[in-house]
Length: 349
Image (cartoon, rainbow, N blue to C red; front, side, top):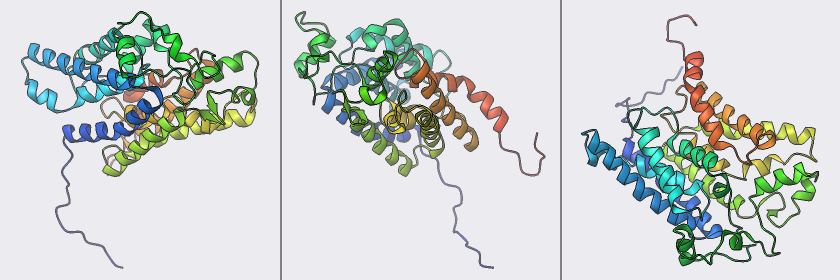
């Protein structure tokens, strides 16, 4: 029998936190660029504002705790949290919303429990849920994609809308499609149409859809998928959670579509709409708030995917990743407890 013998060293050095965060941030950029291409400069402005607020909050809290400000800022965790909040909220949401959400994420969700590595919930998603529950109108006011929009905001328009400078500009101007009809997100449009008795085929014939997925949203999700695959290649994240999220959503949506194709969207629609790829690769994979064992990570991911489908179909919100991730964060300790690997030489519990 032949044996393969590898040379030493057999223990490899783990990546530093700052390096992992840098790689995740860089892999977020393709999705950010595509998002800006279809929805204007607002997303970039939100991200930059969130980063400035996050770094200021991080420095202030570390000063109060008599900890090193330089080491806290250099680990890039606050910047990553800010970017995730910035790309998740509507492009032209008022400036005070991104400020409020970022302060809550950094000061309350992250540092109230002891800082990086001790938080119970994903800070970006906790901030998103706070804003969504508190300000539902502003958090559901997405503009129409540039390819079918009647008016697309430029850089100056976006600045004026976000900082509420020009009273003559209104959100309704930028929500209009080329046919003059106010548009919602693809998920929200489909959900509303189905509740009004339309079939999924009739709903998908609208201008906001491009055959089977939403205009613009397919390419945004594809860009985040590409960034996520690079993350896997760089070994900045492991495959278990992302695969679990996509598999859980795919299986659940496939079952629903097969049972009732007239009242359910296809699995392709669910996979490439909303925040699916962003959440699967960049949010759910947060190592601090997720399950830790390989089998536990798969269960954790599947739980998120299935809950997202249930809320999308039966819940009151068109997309549901923030709620699903927070629910899975709550379940992570229980998942780890019941699927912890058996120590070699010991019997199963």
